[in-house]
Image (cartoon, rainbow, N blue to C red; front, side, top):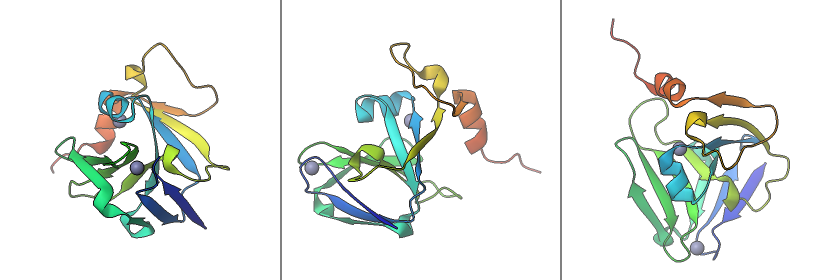
Length: 144
Ligand SMILES: [Zn+2]
Ligand SMILES: [Zn+2]
């Protein structure tokens, strides 16, 4: 199955295949600032997504391990992409809000739940992870 999407002005568009039909929310401070609220990502391997209008994509290296992108014209949040070497390298977490048709997608998790502002909360039954749990998951394995 193919999903299409675009930024607010349409200068950047994409086609993605075999998307997992799920999204997760991230409450970390970087996602909050980048998205202007809560970031909902949909995980896509680099091979499964093709962007057009790439000259309109601005990227910002937000940490040593990832970059974030936006449309240079309208400012829409486009994706978070892991740049560090390792099993997650090249994985896109595209902005859920950029999908043309998000029907059928389920929210399955929230990460950095301990950083979530008290102003809002999501209903429903889904996994949550604290900052410490997320960091432990992505930490390199201990040396032998
Ligand atoms: Zn745009
Ligand atoms: Zn985040």
